[in-house]
Length: 113
Length: 112
Image (tube, rainbow over all chains, first blue to last red; front, top):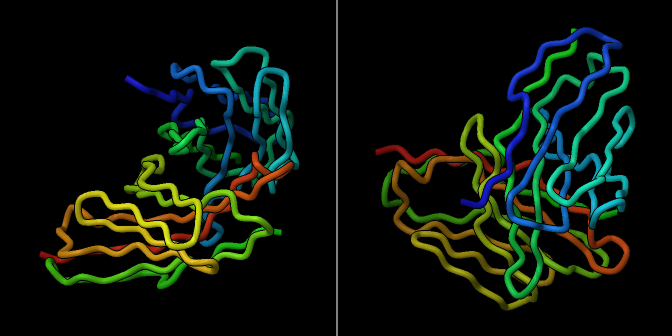
């Protein structure tokens, strides 16, 4: 079964405590991306990766880091989280071709106190 | 900068009452327009990809169409299980291929 998994699903942390949200896919897709979803602002892209070792900024990259050392994993790193990073985060893959399709993970709900 | 505007923000329908959702976009060189369905607390679920004006895609009670400025998601004889937030997104070509810009969504509620 095609799957994008994220861990943890829920996280409460405090300002400044580094955290990592993992994302893994089993579809061998080259493209992966991170989004945050906030009420009234919709889904906004944080970072994306077109392939291993290739990453680029989306619309809201400030305060986040990513790495893509292997095709299946694309972790999102918050080195010094702040309350304005409280949000619902989604990881996604994307596959091109005749019918381009995206697959989203189940989401990670983050609360930064 | 790519922009996507969805309307209405919320739509309430009676079961069987057909309607349409709108997605207006501004993009330099549209490569693809996507529709998703999102249930509360879950990740978006992919529905359709449209590439060029005049293209149409159908799936069960849903039909997506595309013009040079907007896309419509037509819902025919909706059922309560069609209740969800419907999201539209665009991507442009060239060096911006990796970027995806979403609209804020339309919350659809179908009453039995």
